[in-house]
Image 1 (spheres, rainbow, N blue to C red):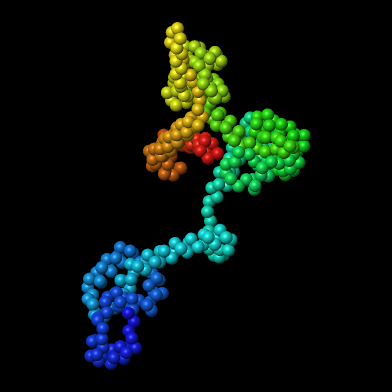
Image 2: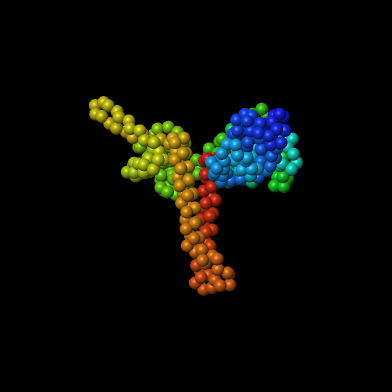
Length: 378
C-alpha cells in the first residue's frame, strides 16, 4: 500500500509514532510498492521459470513481515509472474502481426511468410493431368490442356474442384499460342485436340465453351495405377479380370467372368479368391433354392474401399523404402566419407554398387510419392 502523507514526514524523522500507526506491511504490499516504478525493468529480461520459482520460494521463506525488502528480492519475487506476462506479450505480438499481414497493413519490417500448400498441390495436380493426357493422346492435346489450366488457374480458388472455369474456343486458342510449345498450332488443330479430349471425357463441351473435368482425369489415372499393380503382382489374367469388374461396377458371377475374360474356368476361381483375400475384390454368396439348393459366388470392385486399401499399401511401401535407403547408406557410411582418390579397386566397386542402389531406391520413392499424391491429395 502507498504510504500516506502524514506517515511520510514522521517516518522520515524517525519518530516513534510512525511505528505505531497501522499494522506492519505484508511482504506482498512491499513487493507491489517497490515494483511500481520498475515496470520497464521487470519485463526487460526473460528469465528461467523454474529458477524464478525457486528464488521466489526461497526469498519468501527468508523474509518476515516488517523487514525491508531489497530491490533484488522484489525483482526475483516478481520474475515468476513477469516471465509469463512477457511470453504472453510475445505471443500476442505475433498474433497481431499475422492479423495485420492478412489485412495488408503490416509494418514493412514485420513481413510474415507461409508455405502456399494449396497452390503447390494445385500445381502438382495440373502437372499430373497434363502428363496423363500426353500419355493417352499427344503433345497437341497436352498443350491445349496446359493452356486451359493456365487460363483458369487464377480463377480456381479451391484445390479440389470437379470442373474448371468454362472457356471459349477463341480464349483457349489465344492462350495456346502464347506458349512456346503451342506457338505453331492453328485454330483447327486446337479444335481437333478439344474433340479428342472430349471423346475421353477429359473435357466437357457445352454452348461453345469448354471446361476440364478434373474428376474424370484423376479417376482414370487412379484406375490405371491400380490395374498396373494388379498386373505386376498377380499376372495378366488377374489384370483382365480386375479390369472387367472395375469397369462394370456391379456383381458378376464366376463363370460369367471366366467367359468374358477368356480365363480358364479352373483358374478363374483361384485368381478371384486371391484378389479377394488381398482386399482387391468384394465377394458375396448367392444361395438359390429349388429342386436342389445351389450356391453362386458373386464378385465386385468397391472403389471407395479399395482406394483406401491401396493407399495404405503405398504408405507401407514408402516406409519400407525409406528404411532400406537409411540402412544401405548407414552400412556404407565410412566408404561414402572416403575421398575420391582413396576409392580404388574393390572400394570403387563397392562405391559404384551403393550408388546404383541409392539411385534405384530413391527413384522408386519418387514414383511412389507421385502415386500417393494421386490417391491422397488429388
